[in-house]
Image (cartoon, rainbow, N blue to C red; front, side, top):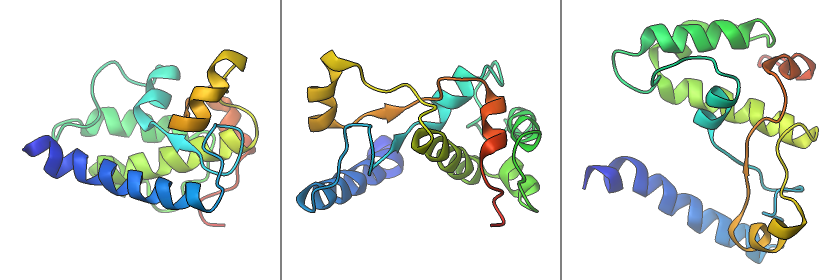
Length: 141
């Protein structure tokens, strides 16, 4: 199916990688080690665009997201590439979310969710405003 070809294969690869990391003792609970991200969740949390930024004709939405990111991060020479490719934009969003997670600026599992998060993982969504990105390093270094 299309979903397996486009999304499922990536998910299956991620599952295999996470299983290997778990065998090496990696922590998936959201506290440290492995950070699972959802770029669309950050876009929604920051209310950056109203519609989807994933469609072929969504360059205006991606441009708005890139402009918002660029006010707080040094995106180097990659802005045009992120407007053209939702995959490239997602990669930058994921990296930014990991930076925020490592700094304790994403929603963490509460006590009742910790056991389940340790088994299944925890998806990090930014807990503060997009301005929190200003403390992260530039993409060039």
